Image (spheres, rainbow, N blue to C red):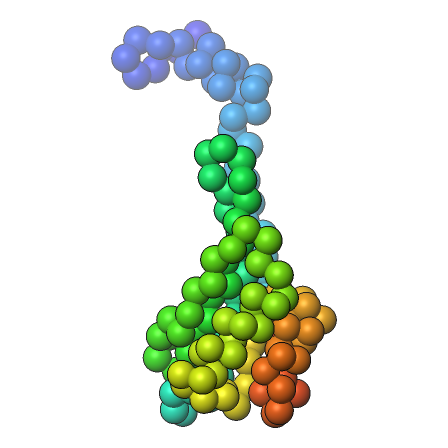
Length: 135
């Protein structure tokens, strides 16, 4: 037996380290790099919508809708509600449209069907150009 640093027996330390498989190196997953997002040329051309969810300590869940302008990453609106129904999303988008005007297009991080149903309340070309956000 050889004695290692600080008087420990290297074989003993190696065995204790090896038994719970602590020496296994976790290889990182190789993922394809996502395409770079196109930056709009002016404000109010493309908005991004993202839904988030969280809960309070007492277990009640709430949802948030974040709407951002992709040109300058300005937060246009945050809608917070417990169920956050589609009517609330449409109401929030309509308020932002009254304030800023309609965007030329939208992106959404959720499934395209959900986003399309919610953007139908926006009407016009903005609803027709809704695209899922590349994750």
